[in-house]
Length: 140
Image (cartoon, one colour):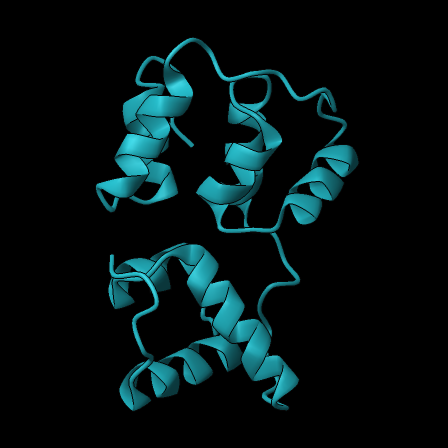
């Protein structure tokens, strides 16, 4: 992934179409396709919303995201969960509260934070990182 890569017209057209008609896809799928981070996709969709593009995105949590939150509960910090899911810290905190998940911010198990950051720098997405960092846990 290249940081601060300029958005091409083709990418923006694809993103507008995706934002208006997601057809079951989520930001993680689109990020993978466009070779960008889920956070970058969400940020650009937010910007498109401000420009008046009607979107059916960002409001809903997918089943995959909810299951991921449950699986990560108590294993990594809320901040790390937000980074892996490409959502804001406050959005993750709110959803965790709705789901009745523990609210304390437990530290990452020894060495896991460093491992997670290393995998993220290699360009892996949240699901891939979670599968590699927690291989014995149920898949999301």
